[in-house]
Amino acid sequence: MSRHRLAALATALVSTVALAACGGGASGSGDSLSLVGFAVPKAGNNAAQAAFAQTDEGKGTTWKESYGASGDQSRAVANGLDADYVHFSLTPDVDRLVEAGLVADDWDAGANKGIVTDSVVVLVVRKGNPKNIQGWDDLVKPGVGIVTPNPGSSGSARWNILGAWQHVIANGGSEAEAQAFLTKLVGNVEALPGSGRDATTAFQGGTGDVLISYENEAILARQNGEEIDYVVPSDTLKIENPAAVTEDADPKAEAFLDFVLSPEGQAEYVKKGFRPLESVEGVDVGEVEGANDPSDPFPTPEKLWTIDGDFGGWDAVNTKFFDEDAGIVTKILQESGNS
Image (cartoon, rainbow, N blue to C red; front, side, top):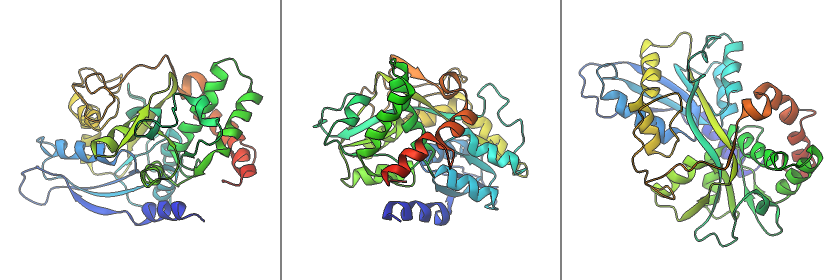
């Protein structure tokens, strides 16, 4: 097992920490809520928690958090890890909790369809883009080292690999050609960490020439002083991350979800590089530090695909691409020795 995979497991199992929501200014013990999520939106969640604490309803709220790879975190909650509020990479990771009787089956009935954060798949490169990475086709060239998380544990990885597949299909390629393209891409992978955040850490540590990642991860890294650049491909995949309140949650968890879906709540995620939800009107985007163009931080790609609109939904995707025995991506990874 690689050191990156070990690190991901350690994050998933041991990362539970106590976090006080800042600035509440309330007296008394308040409410303590448990948040379990995938690692990528931690900075956005923490910003939203602090802003929630400034509201009358959020005063005095404190948080216990656990972050790790999305699939690992979802399975941990299904197996007994305490959670009032979950925030995962993929809708099926919440559906797993519906099947376990831990989340209501109408959790995605709202205008946002259960989604709380949006982003797009981008290509993160070294400062100055020395390999001149401009789009998906550059990833399969000889000598280009790729970092992307493992789709067996990471939701981030599934967005990434599907973006590469659809690039071929949407430009007139056959499924055989798309499979050959993924095989070449996987052949250039230098590291396959357990989560999106671990993949970012590996790239920042010097591994690879390009990191396939979320746009918000690239923006946040630049906000934190990392000397990197990123490219938004002209054709890419829209990332939609769900959140839900568990059946036995403290009522404050529902209040927090309502806040996250407000213009004020979405604005906190925007500051950390997430795109505002289309279902929430009136979000103040303003300037976003770390974006390629802070005054116009979220350019619209020429082609922006979605899981529901272009792949037939997650049930179809998981069967076709990620089935443990017959999935296209599963087989490619096994044959490459990178699974």
